[in-house]
Figure 1: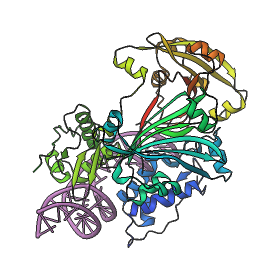
Figure 2 (figure 1 turned 45 degrees about the vertical axis):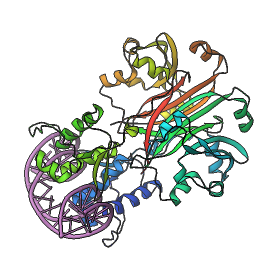
Figure 3 (figure 1 turned 180 degrees about the vertical axis):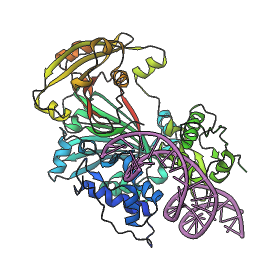
Figure 4 (figure 1 turned 180 degrees about the horizontal axis):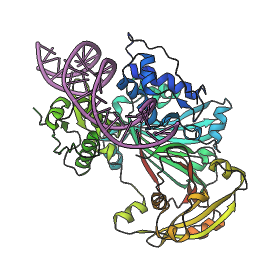
Length: 247
Length: 247
DNA sequence: AAGTGGTCTAGACCACGTA
DNA sequence: ACGTGGTCTAGACCACTTG
């Protein structure tokens, strides 16, 4: 007999937060905090729905969400278990950026260029505006512990463009949040190429040394383009980590 | 008045395929085939559930799945629309690999090394075996149109290791499929670094030129590690493209 | 046989946006 | 006021695994 994990949570039926969300969030937190061990059996959905006094479909919706995020594994006839730790605790590896952040260093950004330019054909097409129309071109350099980490080049629609001062103080996405703009999805392309002379100077690396590149087009859920990014990273300080799920 | 799109689909209640799946798949196909325009309004869920003779929760489940995949956008009080094309038709850009595939060239692989080795500490830890235990180490070179595209280095558990001949004929994941092994998730790390002498020779690029690297640990849904990959790509021929959704 | 998760139903009420 | 999607319920039946 294995003792199943019972999530301790109080459901507030007067809250505006959906019931399933009131289960998902604490459960995710419990896993993140290590209050449940990876691989541990979880209380079955019938008991849990009775105990928390929600309907089975509602509880199932919560559990399904956690399965989608890779935190739970369910097997018919067997039960529900917390996913093995490796899956939701991505490998620690060599990214100085990550190490420095863990060590408490804070990243800083410097705006090195901020100007409205006529959009070239390619940029205009991706932004969904006419070629030649104005767009804000911003170049920032990101540092961590005073070491240059990346050059961030962005094209932004003028009507949602953050001010210079705003950008200097906060990240781009914080500026968006202040305008109630939520990025819902983004197309990304990751590649590599040699550093140009200017990039080498800005990042303090040899000319021609490898750079990690990321091009991004970000959308709101309505499909509006809000950001076009062309970023280059020093690969000795930065790498991309993520978990993919197959369907 | 805008005419909403009505999905033409026959629901087979005797099929073993779930009803919602019988809606998801054709809908996805209809969007991929361009039978619906991006941004086009979709029939509301009440009408659609009546028309297809399924319950509203069942239809909602299908639509929600399509929303999760970024194919539909729903707004309360407004309706459901096909997502803008940019979101589900990722940018065409400079990847010779992609171009060559489109042009009909077929990729080939050559197994350059196939041997059982004692696992080093790091490899053993990631594979979930004891250090020194045996593991199959495979090195392949992938070509496209006779140009070397990538060096694929893999460590595999011995009990699911494909034979040399098998690997030569098919891809690694095809070999897994033959053993009824389904990869459910993978942790990936993408970075860049200079080519070593050996890599430069294999990929026919200058020593020290930029390479795109991808390290992957692949899991079954039970959390079992089935593959450990250390791949390097010629960045002039290959890049990673994907869409991310924020929650 | 018993217990698990997977699918499906018919209906209710609510929140939001438009008119 | 109306129509849209969002949430929730109580219960049914099925498929799979284990004892």
